[in-house]
Every structure is written in structure tokens, then in C-alpha cells.
Length: 471
Image 1 (tube, one colour):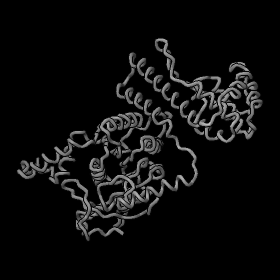
Image 2 (tube, rainbow, N blue to C red; image 1 turned 45 degrees about the horizontal axis):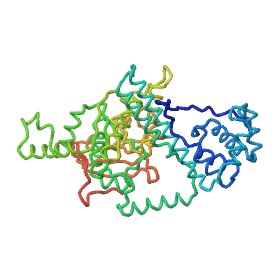
Image 3 (cartoon, rainbow, N blue to C red; image 1 turned 90 degrees about the vertical axis):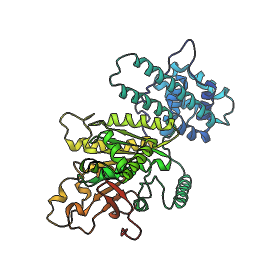
Image 4 (tube, one colour; image 1 turned 180 degrees about the vertical axis):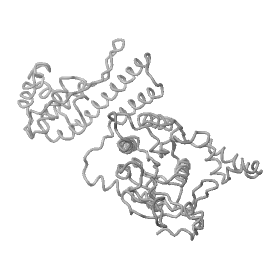
């Protein structure tokens, strides 16, 4: 490896001194880490996995760390002489206090038996400094023109959360640790009848998916009026019973309409009776009232911002996650209705086409799911391919997901909704919907799950025992 590679540019966000108070740090812990990095080969790789240059409060210590890291990457022996040479070649030696400073740290520091523990102390002090500096920055900016307040708050929350998750970066580990974690998932799945994620609310679908895993994206594709929004509602409303919060972003329906549809669906009441038959009977009113009361208690957030951008979605999702955590809950499922209504122009060059916008949004969904460890249910339109076929089989395919092949690539699961009675009035499958698992991460593809669909209350349910003919 070439040792003369460019130096890493360090961007430091350090807190200002406040009334003479010095920001949190531990120079003794830093000295132990430097000593171990230079003189203890058995500790070196463990410390390099924990620390980065910017974690050190002392710039001098940070540059010695960077010297060791670069020498290790270049497969050059790490000794006091090689560290001093590296610093001198980059005109850093005099800045840190000369060769005598390096020698002092390595020869005068107590023996570093607990070097890893000291490394975590250095790391934690850095996180505290980052938190203080971030809050100072937010406070200073808050006195000026912040633009959209919701966006400003979302960015502030995201900045603090990023510090909180700074120690959760994925790292290489021995296969044994991964095997243990995987086996624990298998045991948990056995205890929950095959479920390793959150339930969709449909047991027949759960048996094929194994539940909705955090950090993943499920795309629900269908033509208009096929029931994809109703399926998303069913999944979202099933989460509180599992002890997790959920959210739904609807760019086509207002919050009030969405809440009303939810209430009628839970109550199994035909909403059209309100306008077509002059009202509801006493039993229907009772069921609606009970459903509305149940909904009010559920930790479900709904948002009806039109033409939602990815930046706003990210900010809102982080706010909802924080609000759920204040209630002692984990945010599980976030449904988005629907992809093609989102604004994907942010960050794209002028003149970018719609397919490029959708591709960027699709990739960003996968990143967001991983960042927040949520499961995103992303609704997507199917183009008019099924209607144009001169054959009796109108079932949609993944290739017909509208405006982008990236949707198919980025999704962990793809569920295509098909109802035969929509196309064939004499269908023998009235009241039945097919959920076609066209793609499934780690599972079988092109599996069809048959479920009940009540068009009059837009509700999905499992078929009665003996009617489910899914393979």
C-alpha cells in the first residue's frame, strides 16, 4: 500500500468554552491508548476498531493515532521511530511537541492492561463533546431565520440521534458471534410459530414472510382500486397489539378520511351507508364508536403532507420515533402511500426524468429503514400492463412496477395485489384477494397467499379455515 496517500480531512465539531468550563475529556485515558497503540501489538487492532482520530481531545494525540493507523494499513512496523518519521514527513512533528512528546507518552504511561476500557472512555467523552456542541449549534441557529420550523426540528433531532447511534456501526466479527445471533433468531422464531419480525395482521401472509423485519422495505404494488391502501392500513393497525408503534404517510387521503376509513374497517361497517341509506342502525353506531375509541388509544401517527420529499419524510419519521420512545415504545412499521406521489427532485440535476427521481427515492427508503431500524411498507402503482393484455390472466408482474426498475432491486419483499372480481364480474373468487410474493428476501418467490377482502369496508382478513388454498 502506498504510504503517501492523501491525509484524511477531519471535521471537528467542538463545544465552546462556557463560563470557563472545559469540555469533557480524559487525557490520561488518551495517553494509555497511545501507549498501547505504539507498544502493544496485541492491543493495536482492537483499539483501531474502536477509535478514530477525531475522538481524541488532544490534537497531538489524534495525530499520533493517525500515524499508527496509516502505518498499520501500509503494513509497516509500528515503532517510535516510524511514528516520528511519519509525523515529520507531514510537518506535524513540531506541532504535537516534537519526538520527546511521543517518547514521553510511550515510556512514561502506566502499563496499559485495560487499554480497551480506556478507549471506550475516550470515545464516550468525544460523544459528550459532540452532544454539547450540537446543542450549542442548534441553540445559536434557533435565534435566526431557520426557515421551515418542522424541518429545523427534524434536523436537530436527527443530529442528536446520530450521536446516540455512533457506536452502532457494523463491524467485522468472528463467524461464531454471527452464528449465535442467527441461532437465537431461530429459537425466537420457533417460540413465535415461525415469526422473526412484526406480524402483518394476516396469519396466512405471516406464514410465508415470517413477519416484517426491521431495516427492510416491503413494496406493495397494485393497480388503482385494487386494495393496496387497505392492505397498508391493515398492517399498520396490527402493530399496537404487538407492543410497537406505527405510522402512515398518506399523500392521497387526508388524516380525517384515513381515520374514518380505519374506524369503519375495524367496525366492519359499510361507509357508503352513511350517504346511501340515510344513516347507520344502532348496532353499527355502537361498533363504530367502539372502533373509534380503540383507535384513539393506539400509538399510530398519521401524516397527510402532499408531495412529500425524502428530506421531510426522514425528519418526520425521526420525530415520530422519538415521540414513540418517550412513550416507552419502539417504532415498528412505517407505511407510505404512495411512492409515485412523492417529490424526488431534491439533489437531482435540473432536467432529471421521473424514473431517476423514483430510483433515488427507492434507494433512500432502504437507507432510512436501516438507519431507524424500522420496516417500511412502500405502496407503488402498477402501470396499465394488466389491462392491455389480451388474455384472461391479468395478474400483475414486478416488471410493471411504475416508472422504475430500481423499486424491484431495492425492495426486500414485493407483494402484488390481485382481485379477480375486479376484472371478471362472474368470477368464482368474489371476496378473495391474491397477495403474490413476487420477491422475498431469503424466501421463496412467486408464492401466492389467498386472503379475504371485503370491498364494502375495505378490509383484509384471513380466509376461514379450509378455504386458504395457498401452496
